[in-house]
Length: 441
Image 1 (cartoon, rainbow, N blue to C red):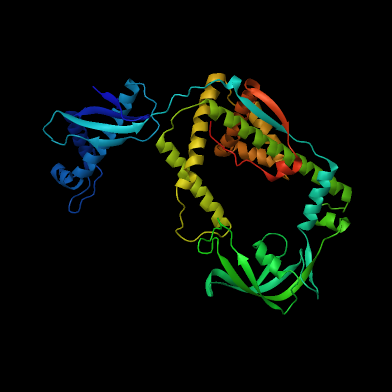
Image 2 (cartoon, rainbow, N blue to C red; image 1 turned 180 degrees about the vertical axis):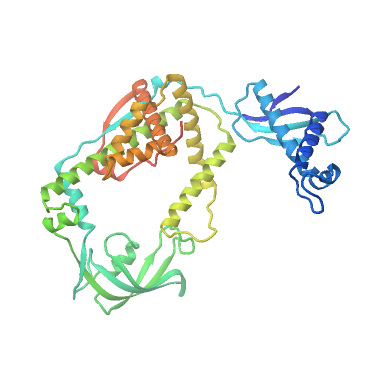
């Protein structure tokens, strides 16, 4: 006989018992099976007395049998009460007396919440569109040329756009402060790499000149020791280099991968890539809008254990990205609170998507999976190999399936809610990409 009590919104405590006789019988059976394989010094295999085995292995066997019995009893009880368990149970043995007939225990765990979808038909969702003009292509080419700028030493005063090599030594109230010193530091003026006061102080300086510059650190600056403070920097300029943009010609086109150097082919390739990037960003933006609409009409608690696990995963992913950029130290961790809000959103969306897929038949079909995979593979040199690799890798194929599921849910929301079309400006779209929530439906 088992009972279940609610101890929170989703927390439950199961109270049940296991017959002592059942436990003792299983322990004896396992010890007898152990006789055939146990190796004990002074005895041949299969000839170890049972009482010797009980002395050496009894505690471990008892623990193993108890663990198995608890799991078995727990599964039977949750099935009996039709509970959807969302977390691993935390067991507590309430009676340890070997003379009792029943071993009483409790198991604390969380259950999945019920997803109650509100009035999605009344929810307004923006569906963003964006076009592309030749001016957008021209600006993209200009940006590309700027990424391949070269610098040459010039004998004149520094101005915006120049790259300068400097030494600097910052002081606060006459004393040096952490991070305020460097030598042979290169900075391109006008890019915002340094604080405005610092960069403006370098303008009109010449090679070999030293100058003191007052620099005000703004409120909210990440370095708390100088936040909102007025400092003084002694700056010595060693070198001024002027920028030189490459020309849009055959040489540059070849550098960008156009074998015959045809500039028009380069423009066509850039136009194609811009179109693909617009499509990707629109998809992310509209997905984010659809997911936000779902969150607005579903009010529910989420299992704390699932949120914590998701936050841990997000933290590890962030640390891995930082490690690849060389921004971490051995043993470095990040506060889990930084990821809790996003983890809650992802877990909640995951639960909502699972419910919608099941309720409205939005499962990914094999044809949808293959279509999405073929589209994705076109960006690689050997698309057929990419497709084959995914089909030979169940985990990768499952990722594609999850993407199709999300697309199906987004389409369902757009077809169900009140949709308002909005045309986004090209620059705004390219400068603002939602982080997205890739949830496993």
